[in-house]
Structures are given as structure tokens and as C-alpha cells.
Length: 182
Image (cartoon, rainbow, N blue to C red):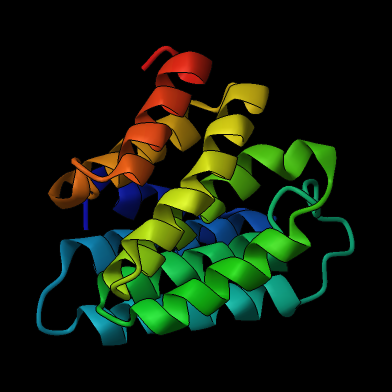
């Protein structure tokens, strides 16, 4: 794990906010899963379990109780599953997360989660369905102006390169250029 992530984790543990601790542990799980390695799945799942423990705890007096919710954590579960090789579980976790991210200020996170869900569909062998879902992500990224959502969207589009000659990929490219200028 990175030095900055380690420091953030230590700071979160020392702080008063269980919500911040949960988010730090979720980020830790994502970093571990993305890095891979022999024990990545076990370590990432352990970090997620601790995040759930913090999130399910008492939030009385927590200065930021709504900044990180179960819906957000489900998205991190999806990313973890995606990068440890369980695309089917990731897809379902992303779907649950996206369905629960309904408040206006959660729309950026919903766009990120939905883009990641499209990646899961791609890894499940359904590139056309992934591209269809990415159309909604283009609109969401444009509406929210979310930088992370746009970065993830471009990364997902790159993974569609093997199908670049398909009409449905060309339609997605046209949509991205028209809406995002990308």
C-alpha cells in the first residue's frame, strides 16, 4: 500500500469519525485489490469487513455521518471484487450501489459506480451491454462534471478497443465526443 494511504489510514483510526474510518478502510481495500498479489483478496476483504464494522457502529456525534454510506461502501466492494477477479459479484455489487445512490449530491458517485459496472459487464464477456451502459455514464459525467467519473469512463472506453470497428462502439465514441468533447 502507498505511504499516503498508510498515513490516511492511521489518521482515520486516530480520529473521532467512524464514517471517515470506514471510508479510509474502503480506500485501503481498493488500493490492495488494484495492486494485486498473492494475498490481495484476503487483505482487501478484511479491510472491507473493518469498513462495515465502522459504518455499522454508533454515529452519535460523528461530524460527517452522511458523507460515506452503505451505498458508497457497496461500490468499493464492487471495485474490490472486480480487481480480484470476480466480475459477476462486482457487477451485482455495483448495481446495488447505483440503485441506492439516489440523492442529488450522490450523482457523481453513481456515475463512477455505473462506469465500473460497465467494466464488470465487459469482463463478463458482454461488451455491447457494457457500451450501452456507458452511454448513461457519458450523460451522468457531463451533468455532474465529475472528473473521476470522466477518467473512469475513458478507461472503460479504452477496454472496448478490440471492438472498435463495431457500430455500437462508434455510437459511443460519437456520444462521448458530442457530450464531453473527448
